[in-house]
Image (tube, rainbow, N blue to C red; front, side, top):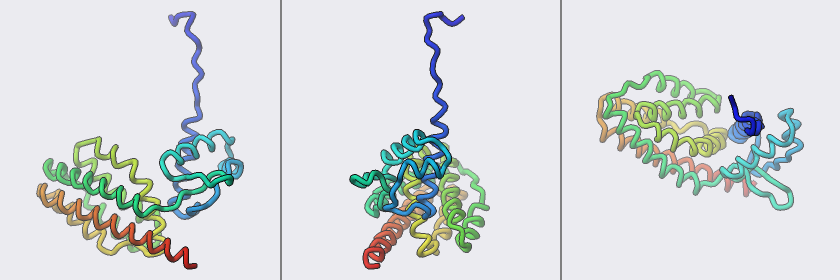
Length: 228
């Protein structure tokens, strides 16, 4: 039996709702529904999601902590600007993680589903931003899984929403970079052949190239917005 002096705990069921609101807000930021600079009013968001203000407040707090939301002076909160320098720093870390994942996966002679390449090329030739981004994420997460080191995916996870948001903004204007899936296929080939050194080199080069191109496109979009 439980001791009589034990105080009955109060179970908070709100975190799941908070996470749902947070995810939906992130999705809206990534697909361009909520563009940088958009004011985020708790009352409007609560009405939009048909929830109370409390989960919205908590979700905004989490998004601010992670850099997706920022203060807007007396105006409250707004969607944070896209920061090309931050993207470069993220890709500096991600290219190392991807290189490690590719090397470990090749060392384990792992089989990665080749349909990921087909799906990615098909998505890149279409018009759906969600499919383009999801296909890219699916490839990299398959690489992390194949590495056998769970901490790689865990470490990379915090970066992916910032990357996804930046990719969404760029893809709306420029479409997919033409060589992305050629690079993915080369990495996959090296992993399948057990060529650990080559797989790591290709994965790191891919990350550096992707980060540099993405940051440059963000800077170009920012200049166009200022001149408009």
